[in-house]
Length: 395
Ligand SMILES: *[C@@H]1O[C@H](CO)[C@@H](O)[C@H](O)[C@H]1NC(C)=O
Ligand SMILES: *[C@@H]1O[C@H](CO)[C@@H](O)[C@H](O)[C@H]1NC(C)=O
Ligand SMILES: *[C@@H]1O[C@H](CO)[C@@H](O)[C@H](O)[C@H]1NC(C)=O
Image (tube, rainbow, N blue to C red; front, side, top):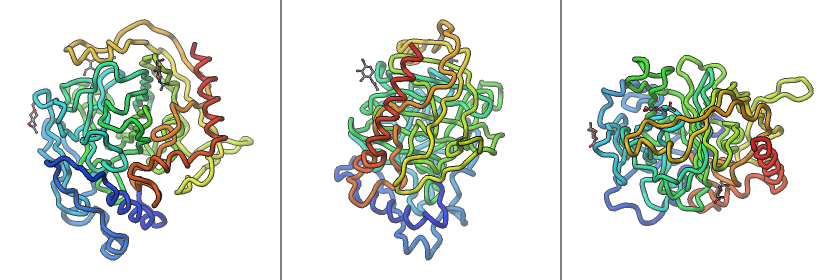
């Protein structure tokens, strides 16, 4: 999330709370991540990256082939970073601490997950590591069969992938409701701190898809068996389709999609309406998310139309693990021209508990209690109804 005058204090307070509730048994080899500044320190010393020796993560630019060992080795604020950025097939092991995430297409992508077993995003947001379908990118392998559905969309302003995934495949507790990750964070060092994203998609690649190019604007929600990841083209800054201030309302609002369990889709898609923008009575209105989320969003997100969808199988998704060439398959035409949104489940990426701030003072660690408190039961029923309606339209 982005800091603002209004929420910096609250965010700093919450970060402090979040870090103070980190699980008691870190890996012995974990480097110490400097605790976030106290609110008093933060305000007095303006401890937000951007001064000398404290670069703003999202402004750092590196060719993929010239990534340093760590892009954020600076021992300032929450730094230095936990893992490393030079990642490759040679170190794509179950213990890899790679913090370079590659997102190419429907079958070749990485997702941030916990470096510690049974983790919670709210506890490990500063040090999440990449988990990948393809060992070439050096992340921890996502086990074949852990993903239960995909919708990939290529649009004129971003590429997006949404899927069902077992929490445990990403080092997360089965019950973790997760949260949102992006290259900003309250102190502008990013979550993960030092995390960088690249893509072979020709909208990013400097050489037509041979070498990955850097994605400067992205966000990802993960938790509750769901993930969604969006990489916004560097050339398009207005509107900001990778807006990261709506981190409590999850994939359904931030990345409306036609994901269905057991279905793997590689699609073209129309642009979504930017999160927070909606029409009512012929007027375009903007909703600002309250934090904490005390009211429902005043609108139901519209799933953008998709077209030219190719279906593929779970086995094809993991073909790269065996050195295969990824997805291919039959063309299933258009899907879901105007569905109302569906949620994957009730929490985390679904409702989007805030990882940056961890949770309310009463939440234990990940914001699990937080997430279940966020959407009143009525709205869960409404979105569940939308899911069933959407699923029926697909089949
Ligand atoms: C990981 O392996 C790649 C080659 O596949 C190498 O370039 C890189 O330095 C290695 N990184 C670490 C941290 O060992
Ligand atoms: C998807 O379907 C499988 C098999 O029916 C089921 O076990 C799983 O819980 C479903 N996942 C979701 C997110 O609905
Ligand atoms: C995804 O990208 C990989 C290259 O990393 C390629 O081998 C594969 O064919 C691509 N798949 C699709 C569906 O474009």
